[in-house]
Amino acid sequence: MRFMPEDLLSALLEAAPRPTAEAPRNARGLYGLVDHFGELRYIGSTSSTDQTFYERIHQRHRTGSEGMSHYFSQMYNTGRMWRDRNDPTTRADGDIAKKLRNEFVVDHCRAVWITLPDATDIAHLEKEVLAIAPDHAIAWNRRRMDVYDEPSDLVDTTLRRLSWDAQELAAIERQRQRFMGAAVSAAGTVIRRPAPIPQTRVTPFPEGPFRFFALDVETANNDRGSICQIGVACVRLDNSIETWVTYVDPRTDVWIWSDLHGITAHTVRGAPTFAEVLPVLHDALVGGTVYQHSGFDRSAIAAACSNSNLLIPLWDWRDSVHVARTAWPELRGNGGHGLASLKRHLGLVFDHHDAGEDARAAAEVVLRAEGFQPVSLQHPVQLSGIGSANPGDFDLIEDYGETAPDTSGITSALTITPQPATNQYAPRPIGTTEITQGNIDNDHIYLRSFFEKFPADAIGGSNRASAAQREIAVDWGGGTVVMTDLDGVKRFFRKRGWIREFFERNGARAGDMVSVEETAPYSYRVAVQRCPR
Image (cartoon, rainbow, N blue to C red; front, top):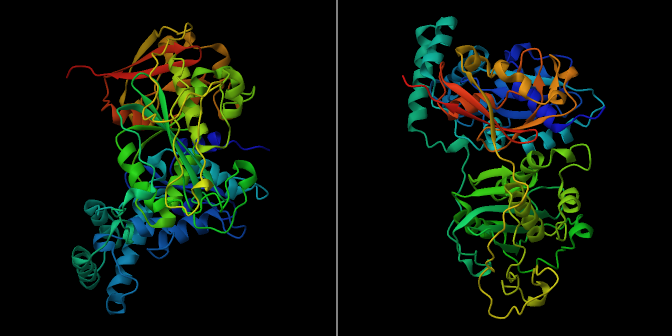
């Protein structure tokens, strides 16, 4: 049986959180950890064949040592629940604080899980799900989030249940005071910010302003952090595209993808390291929208940051795959929405598995979906002269279409006014629905009053087993477009993991309205209309 990462992610996002003690003792698969706010914050797997959900979730994550990959222990190592496991002088008090933390998780934290057959490659599915997961759902992964401030009221609730004596209460109060005076960094580890580095070895980034960016990376091996080339397509206000490309020295002896992209250890000799490149990228992309084609590139940047002990940049990531699914739903099941398929369908011209070329192709996909004919001409980006003893190791990355202009002295992108596509689709309102408190509490939106206006082949039964054969795309204003069918019995969107964030992002309250409009065949946009109070 083939498990699709999109379906597994949706199941995790939509699952009802349950106490950690209820995790199955004889099953394996994917799971998620839910914090005391009720938010999914970590996605993992029981990839080891001798580990069950119960052992991984209730025992390891809840009772394991902070500072390890035990995320309940790590994220709630705070206040009266804090301890320094390496300090023998406070061990007695620290053990009591850890006992309180374990009980706090039982009372106030939850988990979700999806059971998979033992023969399934669970570790591979975990990687695929992580690559497409929204940031809020994996905020604990790789410790990209600070430990929480102590939820004092909830801790007090747990203490009332435990009925501890004065000696135990004094111990955890001493731990709280130690915590307040301790130098605890984000997530309990020392993380250095990118230090100022002379940028003479890094290709200067083009000057903006830019509408958005598309980023692509190539890696040396199966470690996603082994980035050996980065390309960024910069889309100007007139929709012309200027591409920035650099080789990166991943400092590895393992090169297994050279046959795919042609980059070798010899190619990157003298190139900057990722730690040198990141400050340039960070300054250029911060505050902008950064598209990737699938989730690989974002996860590779995160992995490279982890490898170099750097903070992960908080860019506004978007996925051009989701954009393509919205614009060309007919490709679903008919070649798909990968760059190779879109290259054939849209007539794109680019060399696959070159970071600059793939980044430009992703940008062109977004522009085509917006209804513009992308500008494919750009000036070359020089990759030589970055400290290599042999500048000939680094060739020019060029894209001139069929005719190459004189490249001498060119310093800016060619400006061509884009021509609107002739097949633009006029958005069409199809209905509004009132938000109830039940909608807010249970993360759904009733579509009953205009349900018949949705395409019949996108309407399925009451459970996932009877899902429709076709899905619609829902643009809700978040980082990604949601692909879902419709529950024909309950008459709402089947996939609901995005709705809580949609409500929160718009400050929705009972009595407000949600408007739905059709933006293209099988494509819709939802928005909250605030009612006066």
